[in-house]
Amino acid sequence: MPASSVYPAKQHLLATARNMGVDSGVIFVRGGNTIIHPDSDTEYEFRQDSNFYYLSGVREPACAAALDIASGRAILFVNHVDADEAVWIGVPPSLEDYRKTYGFDQTEYTCDIAKVVEALRPSKVYVLPHHNLEQLGSKTLDSVAIDSEKLITAVHEARVFKDDHEIETMRRANRISSDAHVQLMRNTRIGMNESELRGQFIGQVITKGCDYEAYGSIVARGRNAATLHYTKNNMELDSSGEMVLVDAGGTFEGYASDITRTWPLGLRFTQECREIYEVVLSMQKAVIDACVPHKQWEDMHILANRVGAEGLLRLGILKGDIDSIMANYVVGYFMPHGIGHLIGIDTHDVGGYPSGTERINAPGLRYLRCRREMLPRMAFTVEPGLYFVDAVLADAKAAPDVAKHIDFDVVARYRSVGGVRIEDDIVITETGYDNLTVCPKEVADIEAIRIDAYEK
Image (cartoon, rainbow, N blue to C red; front, top):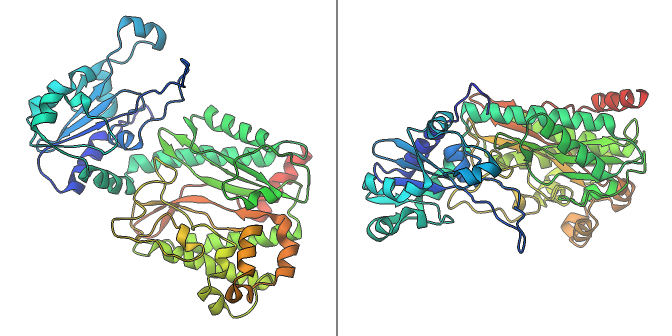
């Protein structure tokens, strides 16, 4: 985190406690541990438990945290490192340094967890269902009620609403990742491999301060872009008439970015590529402009579908009455995913479906990762796309009420496009939205970057 910033761990713990609606007891959470590959001494790359990170800000393994709800006292537990271990991993900060860095009231070693929690004399201990509780000690486990249900819902709801620290951290992740996308636009050349672009992206974001990829990057040329989560990333870029779709983001100080851009492998978009791209761009612009507090997220998906339907009608891919097209969810066969999702510590962040909220069983809509009212400080991705997926279009052809609205001869002309997706990360404000993503997406801007790159 920035040197001048203290991670708001205590504020996150208190927000979670408020969501629980209780005024006593202890919240206890554990961080992740390093994991060793089977039959070796090689560690898997460590990534902190997301809920623990939210409540502590600590990215190191083998730590824990507690909140005495009645007093509001926040306690961080860190692993003791002896001299032998310090030879290998370095000398850790002092307990006081940990306390100041993460904003806790008290710091202790993990070997003292049982003693410290016992001294708080809790009536109940609230834990996460997937956490091991052995460190609490037999006395606490035998004599105190353990609640493993209430905390998970409360922390998920707290994570939905981003504070200023979180928003600025996500803005930094987006800036770094946006710059990396632009660099890839400049560097893309015929004869390269998809893997080269992925490697360049990872190098760019890590060089600029990101921790790692927020998720497995997607680098998909041409028809590969018709696979939504294509991750082979191993084919040659060999046709100037194709595009490459890059869905990639870096994680900065524990918070993810999620950005997608699609650009031509040559200097300019072909006519078919440009036409599909411009429909997708119009879908994204319409949705982003409509993002204000108190609207329902699923309505943003429906809006994207309607704008997409209008664009596909203009191209002759769709035909007939737009109200019938919408009623039969025809665009869902070209955009078989949701319009976006919550984002934060996790790329697909928690809290998208509050208790009792059901999924909508309709093409496209059934894959929505979020169904709830948009409120200030929520962070969403907005990622419309249009794809020509053979298996999905075969389903469409077999459904008479859908097939009557699709001109499959025209579809065949656009099949080589594969797919187009454009994705930004936004935060809902009191009056609208704040777009954290600063990567070019207008056709003229992308072509200018491509032309300039080739001229140099």
